[in-house]
Image (cartoon, rainbow, N blue to C red; front, side, top):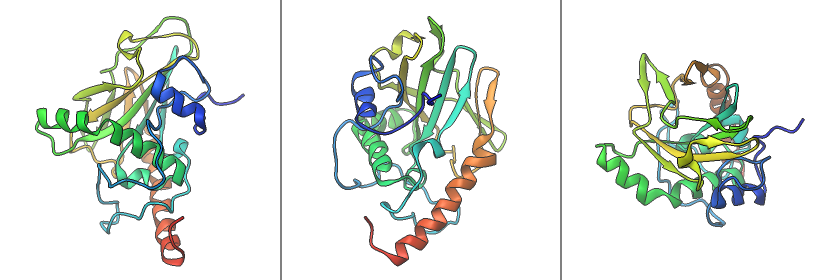
Length: 227
């Protein structure tokens, strides 16, 4: 069975631009405009080694590798950070898609961050994929826990047109950008939850995958020019 969260291709671009009316097999928001080179980072943080930010263009991970999925009875919820130190571990196309998504909403994100007294905030994409008819979701019922502190979104910026209805049909996706507090550090162990469903995959698997890819990227960058 093909995963409903498979990424890539022009189908994904249509999902981000026009909502969830088509391409149900790729229900995640990517780019809003084409680009050939990575833009100047809008969301930057040091990686776990404390060294300079890894160079863009050398990553090989798929977006699945940095996303966390929560399986609820009537929907799947997928969360992906847009932190530059994380998305640079992705392959060039995937990195570009997420950068373009963040850049396309940058003015709104900057304004909302300023309203809450944040430097730039921690920005994530969150997608809700319906499994049953009239599945209801509460956008703010998302919590990311780290170092004994619970972080809830301070703002939600819809991507798909029907997000505000907070209702899903089978194979339908609604997506938004979530803004969290600056103190939420994606380079630390995280537990992600919605209601009573939670995942610690970031702590046990995802962060290790990211750290390993960062080391590989530094090695690649020393041996060849960026693609």
